[in-house]
Length: 98
Image (cartoon, rainbow, N blue to C red; front, side, top):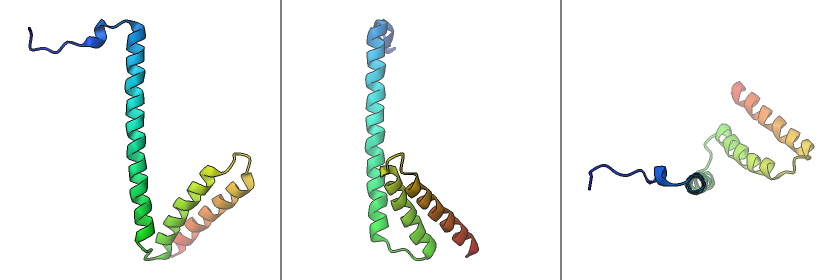
């Protein structure tokens, strides 16, 4: 018996290593997705419960909601995408003026 750990991946065949790598990558992606959902839920809770103290804070909330809306639009709906983009430009221009 030795004090050094044995790297079992070196003793697997190529096919088994690929399956193991895929399984590890999938587990990592699933963990990242879970963490993202938790952070999104926390953000949305704060957006709902903390009132905006200024127009720029209200614009941040609107920008988040509009990004969710745009993500749900079909790719060919360029008119609504352009409308949201113009509104984002307005938000940026008006926040620079204040």
